[in-house]
Amino acid sequence: MKSRILKYVRTVVFLIVIVALINCIDFMMMPSGYIRYIIHVVDNPNTIEGYDCLVLGASHGRTSINPQYLIDSGYAENPLNLCIPGESVVNSYYLLKEASRNNDIKKVILEMDYQYWINDDARDSEFGDLFEYVQLPMSKVKLEYITNELLKKDFRTVYFKKIAYTYDFSKIKDNISVKLSKAYWDYDIKAAEIHDADGPYKGRGFFYREVVNTEKNDFWVCEWSRDNVSDKVIKYYDKIVDFCIENNIELVCVTEPITPTAVIRGPSSEANNYFKELCEERKVKYLDFTLIKEDVLSITDEDFCDWEGHMYGSLAEKFSKILSEVLINNHKEFFHNNYDEKKMEICKK
Image (cartoon, rainbow, N blue to C red; front, side, top):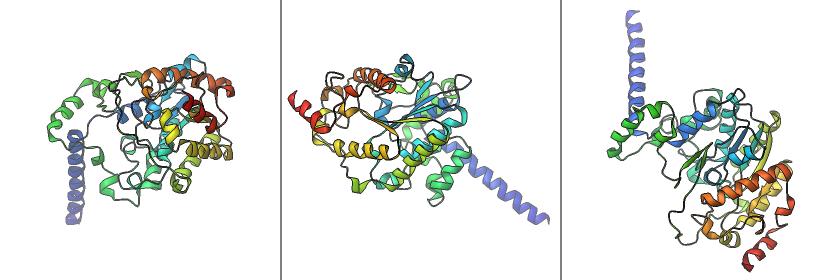
């Protein structure tokens, strides 16, 4: 009997030691990133009812939608931009559910970027979709994520945080220094290591991208076709739609403007027409700002840092104001009827 108890005790002690070692390695090797910060923000609302409006999406959304304009226009009282670079539609769904645990969400703006809708081996691999997951607090939402997405994957990859590690050992000292600081434990944005914002944090999840280099690389945009649309992405888009219906949340899908050259030479017309059809089938409002008229919002290639369409801050401020107005008053007259009209306008400039 004593021998059996001793075996159990040794097993428990062994597991405790392993967990402690893993936590120590996480502490040293994993930088303090933006995802940890913004998930903490959405889990700690600043008012009794918390955030009432969320913007969900990836890097385009983070640098193009300033929630302050949603407040100024009266569209929302306490909005938050929860867009994260690389955020898949899968993670948009779980972030929406996570936010809804602590906030009375009434409105959701979902960014529609065609790059995240195609089959992607990297995103669907062991490493895909996981950067947000590792920062989610333990809850029913995290357990649902594990049950639906992770049980069939390699536990060494998905249940530990090594996907977020830095493998530059010279940075370990910096990681430890940051994590021992008051700013880190207070979840101050100053303690978050951010490499891709190229500008100051303005609050509520919005970064103002400054002009740091006017030169772009050779023209390139992601290929897209209807035949390559991911069934998994459609499934999770439908989950977002259903969740919003079930919880009486107003859902609006939005595609931001991109570089005019990419409108002419890229697949945005085909992709965004697909989004329009998809949203109409689900009875969801879709706003395609790629079709915005020049006299409403003047746009040039120089307003973006790349061909993909990441806005500089000056355009983002203008766009955020127009977006807020359209969300309230529709303003159908702001838009071209189709891409033939838009491309003709661009070619005339």
